[in-house]
Amino acid sequence: MNITGGSQIGRMIALEKKDLSPKRFVEELLLHAGGKLKEKGGGVYEASFPPELKKRLGRRRMRVRFEKGPGKKLGLAEPLIAGNPFFEEMLSYAQESGAVTRRYAASDEEKSAAEIAGRVKFRNFRPALKIGKMFYSPWIAFYFRLTLSSYEMAEKQATLYYDSFTRTISEDGHPGFHQAAWSETPDNTLPVARTRNHNEIFSQVLEVLCDRIRPDVSSFRRQALESFENEARRFSLYYKELISEERERQRSFRGRVEDSGGDIAERIVQHKVDWERKLSHEARRIEPKASVSLLAVEEFYVPITRVELSWKIDRLAFRGIWGYDVVRGDIVGNLCKSCGVKVREAWSCSKGHVVCARCHKKCSLCEAGIT
Image (cartoon, rainbow, N blue to C red; front, side, top):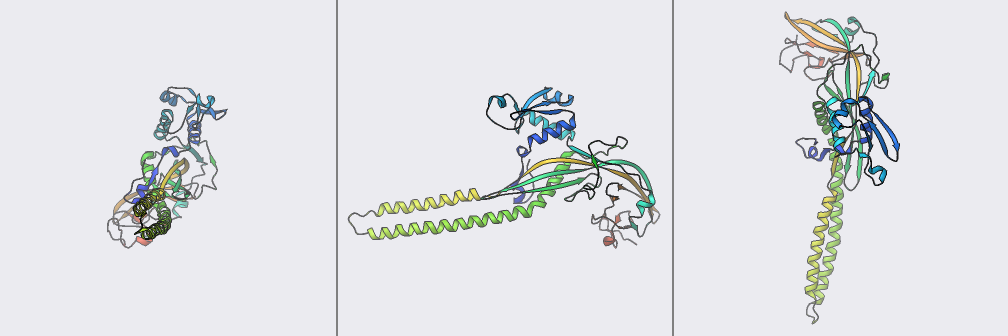
């Protein structure tokens, strides 16, 4: 898949499935789908597939390997690498089912309406808060590796987090990740909120990623072009000196019986051809390339308490939905409708849009006044 964009940098960046780590992908897929991967030695494994994958692959068990290689033992195992039909089918299954690494945070005691309301200052309205049920809302972490190659190669890793509750993307992720106690077993009493299609989320994440890495790609490109210019100057000095020597030799032969000026002229032409060929070769070699590999995907399920707000402005009734993040210990979803930042001082315009203190003079969303 290509990361599309209107810029040259966007066209330079490609997401290649072949860069995915096949072994890690298959291990995680089978772990969470109910299968097994057992090492048999010599780079060969035995994969046991759960019923749904068995139906799609037509196999219950399979001897597999994760690299191309010679040898009789390896040759008997199916290579689960990019291009292999079984591997491609497993990728499709994972994409459709959302089969990725999952972690669940422990649920905490529910907070009262007064405790939650105290975390935001309501300025020109006083909403009534109704506390709903707790549920799991996933944060989806996408781990990428950016590889830049030209004369030299550089690598950089990047992680982007998609918050399913607010539908926002960030680089920092959930502030409580490192402090929370994560488990692979969910609390079955908590329902799981439905998320958007993973393809839609992934496309949105790629757009953000392209913007994030644009400065790195631009800087690397500038360095590569500077290196090419230095090489071009070196070639220029070298071939100009060669041609100058040949012309000097050509002048010294003029008027002699054994004049070989024609041969010298041919060599001058050949030097010019070699010069152009060298420059063309270096231009191709120096052309900077950028590729982005998806290393892994993880879902962190965070307990959220549903918070319903209801209020009136000029006798008009409005409603809103926020949430209380148990792990973070804070309200989520309280984003300014005008600028998108987290609201700590809330104002409501006459059309019910909740905005922050910075935007409270006029709602830029609908141009309605705020009093």
